[in-house]
Length: 328
Image 1 (cartoon, rainbow, N blue to C red):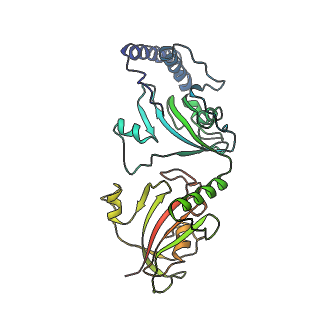
Image 2: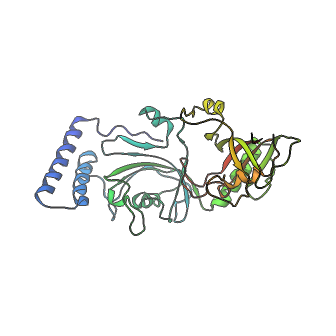
Image 3: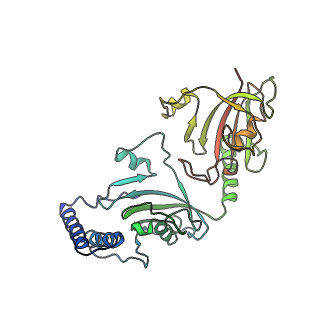
């Protein structure tokens, strides 16, 4: 991903932008204006100073700077779009990023943070207006910078709130356009099985299971009281959670405030949810095991967190290592 030069490194630009900002706020004090009107004055000054008045906004007020023209599928309504992106303020300070290299450069890197493709969905009121407008102008493989005023940082439904108080810059790269998420996950899981697990067949649609060590112990049944250890990963190898201390330390996600010990569970059918329950894929796998056995399972987001936002996004296929123990 192209890393932009710091736009404000030039002191003259800093000074000019500061001047125009002060003029904007001064005018706002003399004549009562809305917050959007004041922000527009600052944004206009920014465009004039930094971009020499060469940019034209869309009708909504979005500024888009193409960096690389994509040659793949166009982003359309009701698509899934995997992106790499960063957000910045108008002084070119990073606010957030999904790029590990940038996070390291600015001193914000954490092993516990997922730096990988992030999924946006168009047409579902789940991304802000300005970002969605920009994405719909791009193709797979493309890169662009969006300058999004705060009035475009709400969602396309009545009563939604702005998520940015001021104009925010988005640097975006389109990695993959998904027309059918179920088909994409099916293909992804099959490829993962072939590459890492010898092409084991799915036990059910988009659900895979393999015993690592068999046991002569009793089978786990619904309502059985048990303990279990686990490691949760994404298919790219990112470990997002575990209750095993050595594993947490190995992957640099150890949390001194967390207790690392086998967890108690009352085995339940996969459709049961709520407190004390595990996700569908884990619940199904545990009921296929005997006490003392170890297994791996990987499955589509239908058996995981689905559309519920996690630290690693939405609609992620998941991998789990599971060990089932007798409750002490």
